[in-house]
Image (cartoon, rainbow, N blue to C red; front, side, top):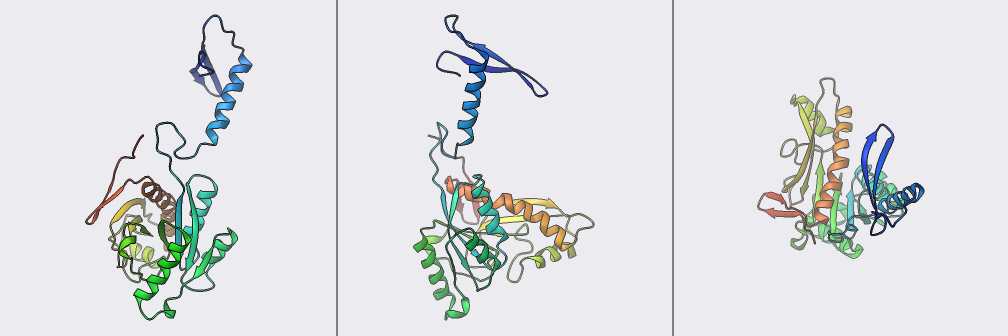
Length: 269
């Protein structure tokens, strides 16, 4: 619609040519260039829309994230790239590394994201270790913790249950557990002769890869796959799955009942 009395509709599309229909009272004169200029203005306006900007939806504020890394930080980089591209309405408040010298921490520094190191060996037990991690997370103002290749076991405080996620490069509960990470997972999938693999996003409990499953994305295992080629294909699905899980959390659509995570319909104003 242009103004309150002029309506423009698409009546035909053939190749790169679009034919428009214009409805207006006889008392109003509409010129072709006015129609095109109005459409271009609408397109420019639509390009700036963020989640929650549309009429009839609840405004969604950016999700505040803390990301825990133990390696190269490819999961972190995927999130940073999607945030920069505005396809993920979020911000990373803090990155925590499990040891010095991690490429994941270097990625955070290059993106000007606050980062810190919390080493397991510096603490007497898992309780003290976990308390320090979550104290730093809370100080950062993050509301959701994401494990991205994090290899140290942590104990999730009760008030953080349902607010800590992990992504695993297999279709859990298969090929998960202590010691199953990275290339080891894909080697095990190939050794078992699986025809399908994929990734799993789940809430974190106090075990290895045992929390309630939020979502999974499958991918084929090809006859000539190596652990490296399969890992690349699984990671393509991880890049989609984690942002989607964040959006579901952000919109309040995740509801946990026992071992099951229900995805409710989004609330509409």
